[in-house]
Image (cartoon, rainbow, N blue to C red; front, top):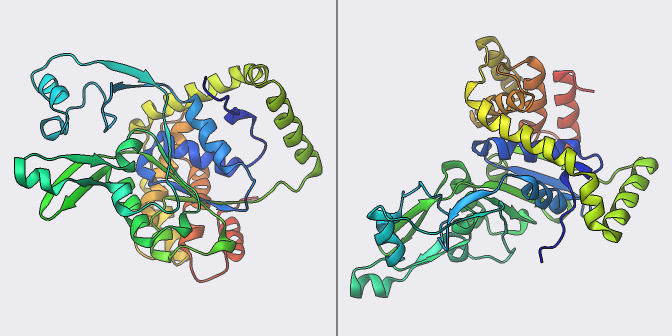
Length: 342
């Protein structure tokens, strides 16, 4: 039996974190979200809860690369001979429906474990590519959850961010290479007290939110009550939130369909550029991600045109972690002041 999952819509507060996660699901090209903050604030609960309410996906049964039935991108090179021959000849293969997976990356994961490996001996002796798929293959079309990302080797983090940005993973060894789709929603978490990410890596996370425990005693009691209700009667608790969960799922699906139709005026694009220049953001990644985030927010709100409010909301998720000249608290205050946020 599957373990009951706490409903996403029942999570108290942490609105920025929830919004950042939803936006990345709607638009994976946002390059993931980094959640900074203390332990016990619902980070992993939110990730698993969001995955649980997303629509099921169709997957070729036993495919190590999680391919969809109509996706034959790498079948001609795949090491699974039986499936390969059927797929390439147009024969039907078994297809299953399943929920979006949350794949967790262990803190001590090596690059080979993440990327995958090629059996060089088989390649040289038989002329065949024998692939040992890595974590990125398992995460394709799902959510890759990296707890304590700041404790990972910098090179491993680089590989994750490259794949998240390009949607492709490349396995190379001694001149032999194999690539496969690796489109996933990247969610990294970290406690700043345990060390920071290098600015170059921090900048490559599309969105970033800083969260902390709820301070309002009434809201803390609400958290305790809901958790107690869930632990005592999970099925009953989930049933009470089912309608709201269904509405959120529909809203996300509609936003995914609507995103390609969303437009933004040149005036607001200039506003984005001005914000980035005025706050001293290096490079152009911030501008591009902010544009995508603003369009995604509009789609999530059911609109086909970006408003200034969308740009301001996007700025609070995209810009603070890209500013390295001030403490994070001062940066957040500057962003809020500049964009008129409360």
